[in-house]
Length: 145
Ligand SMILES: [Zn+2]
Image 1: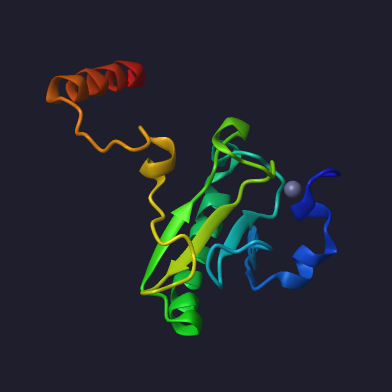
Image 2 (image 1 turned 90 degrees about the vertical axis):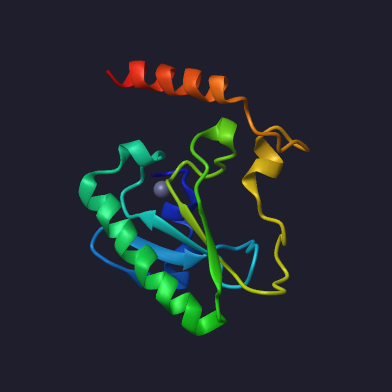
């Protein structure tokens, strides 16, 4: 797409680390930790739901390969996998991108990467009462029908 940085910036292509028929991966320009990678479909679509089954498989193929490579290259001991879906959820580029953030002891990134801290009842980690959880489960179950 014309206004999409992933589709138009020449740097993205030269940064490309790995690709398959339908997806590619490259290091992001503002990494949380060294080796912070983005995996994108080659087709410019904004949301996970817009991806075809084949594109999702292609993204998963690269994710698996990158996990191995990042362990080898950076000594990764763990990973954060994330995507922001929609502007309201913080998606800044309207082209689906999966973040792969390699983590290891003492890394210099956000040491307490814990989405709940930022987006889920900040400052509170109280467990919801069991009856509320059952009510949520019922709501979801009804919506699935
Ligand atoms: Zn794009």
